[in-house]
Image (cartoon, rainbow, N blue to C red; front, top):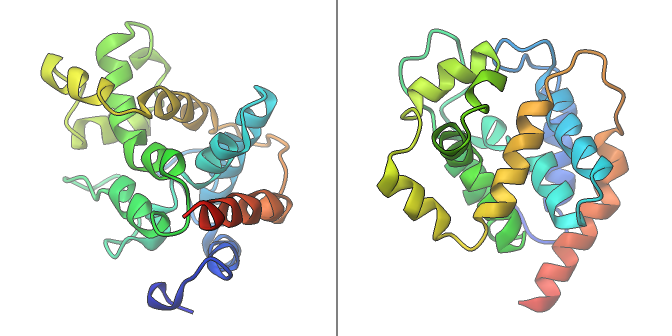
Length: 194
Protein backbone atom coordinates (compact mmCIF):
# COMPACT_ATOMS: atom_id res chain seq x y z
CA UNK A 1 0.00 0.00 0.00
CA UNK A 2 1.26 3.50 -0.78
CA UNK A 3 0.03 7.05 -0.24
CA UNK A 4 -1.65 7.20 -3.66
CA UNK A 5 -3.97 4.26 -2.81
CA UNK A 6 -5.06 5.52 0.60
CA UNK A 7 -8.74 6.03 1.39
CA UNK A 8 -10.92 6.35 4.48
CA UNK A 9 -11.24 2.56 4.69
CA UNK A 10 -7.51 1.77 4.74
CA UNK A 11 -5.70 4.82 6.11
CA UNK A 12 -5.75 3.66 9.74
CA UNK A 13 -4.33 0.26 8.78
CA UNK A 14 -1.70 2.04 6.68
CA UNK A 15 -0.65 4.07 9.72
CA UNK A 16 -0.74 0.98 11.97
CA UNK A 17 1.56 -0.79 9.53
CA UNK A 18 4.00 2.12 9.68
CA UNK A 19 3.99 2.03 13.48
CA UNK A 20 4.60 -1.72 13.49
CA UNK A 21 7.40 -1.64 10.90
CA UNK A 22 9.19 1.54 11.99
CA UNK A 23 8.04 2.30 15.53
CA UNK A 24 11.19 0.91 17.13
CA UNK A 25 13.35 3.54 15.41
CA UNK A 26 15.17 5.88 17.74
CA UNK A 27 13.50 9.18 18.47
CA UNK A 28 15.86 12.14 18.08
CA UNK A 29 18.33 10.85 20.63
CA UNK A 30 15.63 10.64 23.32
CA UNK A 31 15.36 7.67 25.74
CA UNK A 32 12.25 6.41 23.90
CA UNK A 33 11.51 5.06 20.44
CA UNK A 34 9.39 6.91 17.89
CA UNK A 35 6.31 4.84 18.68
CA UNK A 36 6.83 5.08 22.45
CA UNK A 37 7.03 8.85 22.10
CA UNK A 38 3.79 9.16 20.14
CA UNK A 39 1.98 6.63 22.33
CA UNK A 40 3.07 8.57 25.41
CA UNK A 41 1.67 11.77 23.92
CA UNK A 42 -1.69 10.07 23.36
CA UNK A 43 -1.61 8.58 26.85
CA UNK A 44 -0.93 11.97 28.42
CA UNK A 45 -3.83 13.44 26.42
CA UNK A 46 -6.11 10.67 27.66
CA UNK A 47 -5.02 11.22 31.26
CA UNK A 48 -6.13 14.85 30.94
CA UNK A 49 -9.53 13.78 29.59
CA UNK A 50 -8.86 15.20 26.12
CA UNK A 51 -11.48 14.59 23.41
CA UNK A 52 -10.84 11.82 20.88
CA UNK A 53 -9.63 14.25 18.22
CA UNK A 54 -6.87 15.55 20.49
CA UNK A 55 -5.88 12.06 21.62
CA UNK A 56 -5.61 11.19 17.91
CA UNK A 57 -3.62 14.37 17.22
CA UNK A 58 -1.19 13.59 20.06
CA UNK A 59 -0.83 10.02 18.77
CA UNK A 60 -0.18 11.11 15.19
CA UNK A 61 1.72 14.37 15.75
CA UNK A 62 5.06 12.97 14.52
CA UNK A 63 3.71 10.79 11.70
CA UNK A 64 5.65 13.01 9.29
CA UNK A 65 8.87 11.40 10.48
CA UNK A 66 7.57 8.25 8.82
CA UNK A 67 5.91 9.72 5.74
CA UNK A 68 8.49 12.33 4.82
CA UNK A 69 10.81 11.52 1.97
CA UNK A 70 13.55 13.35 3.82
CA UNK A 71 14.29 10.39 6.09
CA UNK A 72 14.83 10.25 9.85
CA UNK A 73 16.31 13.00 11.99
CA UNK A 74 19.98 12.93 12.88
CA UNK A 75 21.70 15.03 15.56
CA UNK A 76 24.06 16.12 12.75
CA UNK A 77 21.24 17.72 10.72
CA UNK A 78 21.85 21.34 9.85
CA UNK A 79 18.39 22.14 8.48
CA UNK A 80 14.81 21.38 9.46
CA UNK A 81 13.20 18.49 7.59
CA UNK A 82 9.61 19.75 8.02
CA UNK A 83 8.06 16.57 9.41
CA UNK A 84 5.18 18.71 10.69
CA UNK A 85 4.12 19.73 7.17
CA UNK A 86 4.68 16.22 5.79
CA UNK A 87 2.48 14.73 8.51
CA UNK A 88 -0.29 17.27 8.00
CA UNK A 89 -0.25 16.65 4.27
CA UNK A 90 -0.70 12.88 4.52
CA UNK A 91 -3.48 13.18 7.12
CA UNK A 92 -5.45 16.04 5.52
CA UNK A 93 -7.66 13.96 3.19
CA UNK A 94 -8.79 11.63 5.99
CA UNK A 95 -8.76 13.45 9.33
CA UNK A 96 -10.63 16.53 10.57
CA UNK A 97 -8.90 19.91 10.38
CA UNK A 98 -8.26 20.07 14.14
CA UNK A 99 -6.06 16.95 13.92
CA UNK A 100 -4.34 18.05 10.72
CA UNK A 101 -3.61 21.50 12.15
CA UNK A 102 -2.31 20.12 15.45
CA UNK A 103 0.10 17.92 13.50
CA UNK A 104 1.03 20.74 11.14
CA UNK A 105 1.47 23.25 13.99
CA UNK A 106 3.19 21.20 16.69
CA UNK A 107 6.63 22.57 15.73
CA UNK A 108 5.25 26.11 15.52
CA UNK A 109 3.65 25.56 18.93
CA UNK A 110 7.08 24.82 20.40
CA UNK A 111 8.44 28.04 18.92
CA UNK A 112 5.33 29.87 20.19
CA UNK A 113 5.64 28.51 23.73
CA UNK A 114 9.34 29.40 23.84
CA UNK A 115 8.38 32.97 22.91
CA UNK A 116 5.39 33.36 25.24
CA UNK A 117 6.08 31.16 28.29
CA UNK A 118 9.29 32.04 30.14
CA UNK A 119 9.42 28.56 31.74
CA UNK A 120 8.86 26.46 28.63
CA UNK A 121 12.37 26.55 27.17
CA UNK A 122 13.80 25.11 30.39
CA UNK A 123 11.51 22.07 29.99
CA UNK A 124 12.86 21.20 26.54
CA UNK A 125 15.05 18.14 26.19
CA UNK A 126 18.50 18.66 24.64
CA UNK A 127 17.21 17.21 21.34
CA UNK A 128 14.28 19.65 21.38
CA UNK A 129 16.66 22.54 22.01
CA UNK A 130 18.70 21.42 18.98
CA UNK A 131 15.66 21.09 16.71
CA UNK A 132 14.34 24.44 17.95
CA UNK A 133 17.45 26.07 16.52
CA UNK A 134 16.83 24.31 13.17
CA UNK A 135 13.17 25.33 13.20
CA UNK A 136 13.76 29.06 13.59
CA UNK A 137 14.05 29.52 17.34
CA UNK A 138 11.40 31.26 19.44
CA UNK A 139 8.82 33.19 17.43
CA UNK A 140 8.97 36.94 17.03
CA UNK A 141 5.92 39.12 17.72
CA UNK A 142 4.59 38.92 14.17
CA UNK A 143 4.88 35.13 14.13
CA UNK A 144 3.11 34.92 17.51
CA UNK A 145 0.21 36.97 16.14
CA UNK A 146 0.02 34.81 13.02
CA UNK A 147 0.09 31.61 15.11
CA UNK A 148 -2.72 32.91 17.32
CA UNK A 149 -4.82 33.64 14.22
CA UNK A 150 -5.11 29.91 13.49
CA UNK A 151 -8.45 28.66 14.87
CA UNK A 152 -6.73 25.53 16.24
CA UNK A 153 -3.72 27.17 17.89
CA UNK A 154 -4.88 26.40 21.44
CA UNK A 155 -5.32 22.71 20.59
CA UNK A 156 -1.88 22.68 18.93
CA UNK A 157 -0.34 24.08 22.12
CA UNK A 158 -1.93 21.25 24.13
CA UNK A 159 -0.57 18.66 21.72
CA UNK A 160 2.86 20.30 21.95
CA UNK A 161 2.86 20.04 25.73
CA UNK A 162 1.95 16.34 25.54
CA UNK A 163 4.63 15.97 22.87
CA UNK A 164 7.31 17.35 25.18
CA UNK A 165 6.03 15.16 28.03
CA UNK A 166 6.21 12.00 25.94
CA UNK A 167 9.90 11.27 26.41
CA UNK A 168 9.93 9.09 29.53
CA UNK A 169 11.75 5.77 29.41
CA UNK A 170 9.58 2.90 30.61
CA UNK A 171 6.27 4.79 30.75
CA UNK A 172 3.35 2.35 30.50
CA UNK A 173 0.88 3.27 27.77
CA UNK A 174 -1.63 1.63 25.50
CA UNK A 175 -0.47 0.02 22.26
CA UNK A 176 -1.14 1.52 18.85
CA UNK A 177 -3.69 -1.23 18.16
CA UNK A 178 -5.63 -0.05 21.24
CA UNK A 179 -6.16 3.27 19.43
CA UNK A 180 -7.31 1.78 16.12
CA UNK A 181 -11.05 1.97 17.01
CA UNK A 182 -10.68 5.62 18.07
CA UNK A 183 -8.83 6.50 14.85
CA UNK A 184 -11.32 4.61 12.69
CA UNK A 185 -14.20 6.48 14.36
CA UNK A 186 -12.53 9.85 13.83
CA UNK A 187 -11.88 9.05 10.15
CA UNK A 188 -15.43 7.71 9.65
CA UNK A 189 -17.00 10.76 11.31
CA UNK A 190 -14.91 13.08 9.15
CA UNK A 191 -15.78 11.18 5.94
CA UNK A 192 -19.47 11.26 6.93
CA UNK A 193 -19.38 15.00 7.51
CA UNK A 194 -17.69 15.73 4.17
